[in-house]
Structure formats: structure tokens, C-alpha cells
Length: 414
Image: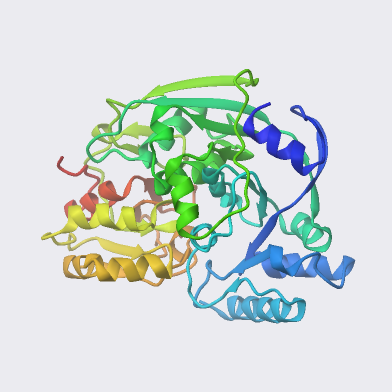
């Protein structure tokens, strides 16, 4: 079996499972945020009085923090009351950051476990060798009540990557390239298992970025076997008592893809789909009105460092708004200590509190009609960041910063 099948077999109490088999699985950790917890509560209240285990539930306020309208404020009030009533202690409601950054930071993700969340980018945690996937509020309500859920075991695609990324080419560019090859529906309800020397040598932020965007190909989950960087990350957070699961050498995969990244240049996802991928050399010159750096995909300290390196000593173009939102409070603090925030402010950027706001067009950076944004986020669908007539390009943090200076899409000088 491969890593996904092994984890699901153990969670279902089976010796082995196979693709398309329906299983009932034990859940190790369940998560919802300020936008998805109230709908989960509504269904939960119809079927149960107490959650199955308050210590295995995590709630994070990140999508509309601080509340941007009365509805958001009401949602957050309902969620706080639920957590207090149910004895849920792992609630992060004071700007700690985006759920997909906060959970790993807090040492809540372990290799080999089953993690579910009422957010499609829950697949991020596959970077640690966990089976992690998003689901709707109704399904999550059943998990909050029982600690179990059903899955159809996904078939798996093996994505083997070799070579060294160079210059300002990053794991974000690699996953964009992969999505462009597979297509935005090409891996629907499949597992993407990333392997090869490039992945084995990749740091934790890069691994998180790649698994985060697996869902943009339709995948059920993205997953990587834990490497040395992951094990060191977990040790630094005193995470113990976990099993590292690895695929058998003769594991079956429905498809196998091979990528060599030695000559890969920065990639750009053009409007209005994530698989509309072009090398930056074919996109340069497109005018922009806004640039956004942040999100659960690329708001980590390494991303901020990269952008600050490009912005140092330069000014944001007078016709461009550069908006920056670190992925967590801890990242924000580290960026302050390193002088990164100062670099951003001196360049003319607007630095916001940690959160998801601009990514989903909620607040702190909504686009108007016909405006164009280049963003380090994960989606560029019509209306994703604001007006349906606006346009969104996706790129890595260095490209976002360089474009903000130029007033048009432009790659940084290597």
C-alpha cells in the first residue's frame, strides 16, 4: 500500500484498503474556523449534546478577524459560546493567525494521523505525512458528535520531482507547474503523493505550500513522507508519540508524473483558473492595481523574507496597493525582530494583522471592477478577491514584490 492507504487502513481498523473502498475511519483531529463553525454547530445541535472529545477539536478565527460586519461578529459570538459550553480549550480567537499555519505551529499535527477540517485547504497538513482533507459543515458536525467519518479510499497519483530550484524559483512555482500539467480537475478525489529528491530536501514551508495547493487539482489530499526537516520541526515543538508512515516500494499508483526543476522559471497562474499556467517570461508587462502577499499558501516567514529582499531600498509603484498579511502572530513577531516589517512599511506597503481576509475577498483588500491583482494566494476564480469583473494572477512572493515595484507583472532580477 501507499502512505495514504496505510493511514486509512489503520484508521479504519483494517489490515489493508484499496481505492474506491468505502471505510469508516477514526479521526485524530478535527478543525473548523469562524466561518464554518456556526453551520457545523447548527447541525451538531440536532444530533448530539456533547462533542466526542473536546481535546481533539480545534477552532481558529481567521477568515474575518477582526469581524468586518455584523454577521461575522455574530458568527464569532456563537462560536465562542459553543467552545465554552463544550469545554473546547484549543480555540484561537485573538488573531493568532490562519488555521493552516497555527495548527502546525502549535504542534497539533502529527505524521500518520487523520486530520479533517471544514476548509478545503486542510490538505496542507499532508506536508507532515498526515492524511488531511477538507469537508463540509454537515460532515464535520457528525465528526464532532462521534469522532468518526466515512471515506472512499482515493486512488493515488505519484508526483516524482528531481533537481534543485534556483534563483527566485520556489516550491510555489513547482506546484503551479504540476497543476498546469494535471489540470484543475485532473486529480479529482485522488491523493497526490509527492516524492523525489527535490521533495526530500525541501523545507517545511515549501512542503506546506505544495500540499496546500493539491486541492486546486481536485485532489482529496496531498501528502509527503516526513523528511528530516519535518522531524526537526516537530522536535522543536515537543511533538512526540507518532508513527512515520511510508509507502511500500511496490505500492500501486494510478498515474505517475515526473518533473525536473533545474530549468524551471517562476510560474504565473493567469485569470481565471489555477491551471492556466504560463512561465513569467510570457506574462511580464501585464498592468496591476494591487499586489497581495500572505495567506495559508505563502504568508510564512520565509515568504516575507523573500519579498523583503526584493523590496529593500525600493518603493511600491504609485498606482499599486501592496497589501501584506503574515500567516500568524508568531511570524509577524519574527518579521518585526528581523526588520522585515520595517522594510515593507518603508517601501510603501500596507501591513495587516494575520488572517485570510484579502484572499477570499472578505476585507482588507477587496478588488473593485476591472482591477487586477497579483497574489501569493491559491485561487484566482472569477470574483475570488472581490468584484466579478476583477482579475487575479497567482505567483510566488518574489514575483509579487517585484511586480508591486514595477506596476506590472515582472520577475525579480536574479
